[in-house]
Length: 117
Image (cartoon, rainbow, N blue to C red; front, side, top):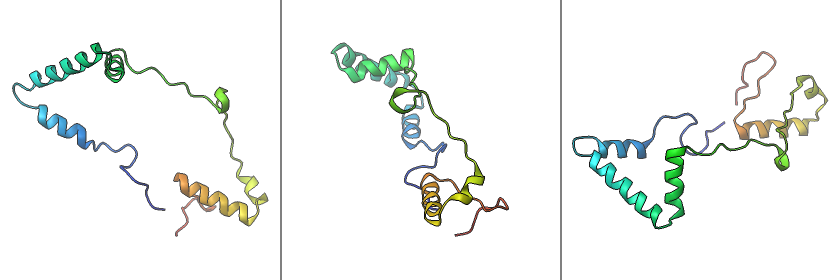
């Protein structure tokens, strides 16, 4: 299975953040941050929604997002019963294998070891 595009999940490589930190290190750079804050505040005062939202998110925190199931209902959980695999056709098993590869889940053989490609 090949990895998808972009950085791996959980990666700590943040090149934009690193570049900003590099530019803002050193004496007198606090003044740069103050100028940036002044620009953001001026845009918010001019009614720019993105600036208003950014200030609210940075000062009050981002609103929590609700986690819901279909149509806003409760989250539904499925319990996997491996004994049901024997009831699947070869076509259904192939479809299941393709689906798990798509989401990055390795299917193990009965010994618990991942199958070789």
